[in-house]
Image 1 (cartoon, rainbow, N blue to C red):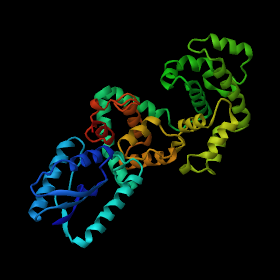
Image 2 (cartoon, rainbow, N blue to C red; image 1 turned 45 degrees about the vertical axis):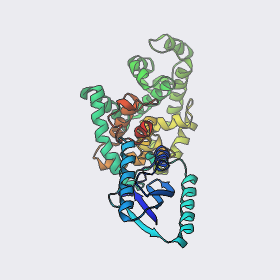
Image 3 (cartoon, rainbow, N blue to C red; image 1 turned 30 degrees about the vertical axis):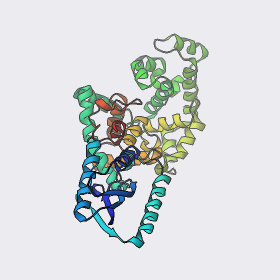
Length: 380
């Protein structure tokens, strides 16, 4: 007698990735496990398996299902692949067999037409559900950062990150962050921070009006100052100081930025402001201009690449999500966890930069490896 058997994952989660699918297909191609039972046709989906089997009675069908789930579970002990305890099955009349095979073939084509399905795409697709998942991860990530760096160092780095993105109190603070971003290109903010005192002293404590009066001889003196060796960046900061003063006029440049922001679209990443900065200053292309805006507390202007990499590997967001959408998501996670958005981003960035989730991940040492789809896929 032929039976149609439905085996679904727990809660219908689409957690069967390509590696798990190949393994399940190998298991199904193996020898018969139950006397009198044979697999006639099958289709492995992202959230379960559909089978046509020949079995003498319902008892044999149930025994086959239990044995199949046990074998798959043994092969994926660390992947979190779980199955529903109740399986559905029904007898298939002789005249229905061709139609059932056609349905299985359609399912197979549909699965093949999809982009590569991995466990990272198996997370709930709704934004609210994804936010809940991310909130749970944040708590574990913060504990992991403290374990890696020590609680004091981790807290100190987060405070510095949040402080570096506070709204600038005046033009001097805002201009200092513009210079900081320019000098950080190709070096990184940590290197600039090591020479920040010398840099501030050389650049007139980042007072635009004073720096704008620097002559060629002054540039030569700056090149001789400790920690400063890049003529192009020094001249860019001096030219930007002149432009800053001219654009501010009798008021402040930050005031003109605030007026432009009122007409811009934060949900799209402040495109008008980014264009304004590239037009107003030298040595600023759009990605760098967005980084300046981020340092001026325009949160959705620029995402942190480490935070995006981590959330993608954890399966919380898609790989193709835009920067503004990612920042809106991080903001929602911060609101749900009653934290500062920059503090949440700092935790993600630390874990992705100094922790195990680097460009070359260290999954075996990661405390989240048993919960991370990327880590489980590597293990599989």
